[in-house]
Length: 300
Image 1 (tube, helix red, strand yellow):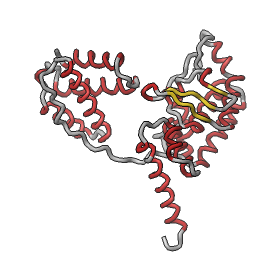
Image 2 (cartoon, one colour):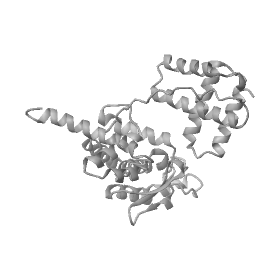
Image 3 (cartoon, one colour):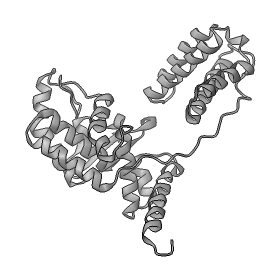
Image 4 (tube, helix red, strand yellow):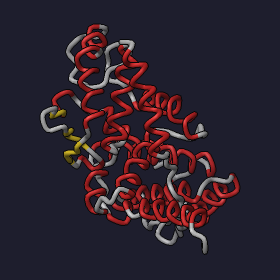
């Protein structure tokens, strides 16, 4: 079997069998297509370890991040593991492929004061009654209040909300469900959106969608639209254009820990499978503490 056909068969298998997010499946497919562009559409049986090393070296020369190269290594290992199981290759050439260690980078975090200003301005725009401004305010408040991912936000249905308890039922990675609380400001923003904006937006579509957040045409809003809202509103407040919905997630986690929240409670809130993933936010808090100490302590 040629590499191109193998990639499509593997991607189809991931879609049907593996509990991976659509974004991960797309990333794996794109990585393997890049392998094909680099080494050619070879027969799978002809591909060896040197071909794979050549591919990763080309990525290194392009300046790809170590995290990207590590993901590509994972993609090609999964692919050839599948090919070996299916009998398409006699030996797995990826077994001896070394993955670079991922560098630990601290996430970008906005200050509580900066986000307070952002949300206050969003509330002012929403007060004018524009349906999309009301939706944007609700989205921003819920992202920061709950720390949920943008994919989780866009996947919410109206029935996932429990307005009485101020909680939302979220379907996270690996189809794992969790219930996440949100505070009074988010509850007010969501209530205003549901009352004053969602019926207007729903009427522009078929009127029957269960989605919580709707776009201008009455359909479920997509991650790109929410990403644009966050970039437009949060970016100027923190002096960076390299922000997105994850900035609000990172900020929520860091501010919770700064306020004394238990690390395992934050892990549960964020839906992290491993406590080690959550612990990166303790490093963020430590860096901020160290900076404050250096500025304020007379013998720092």
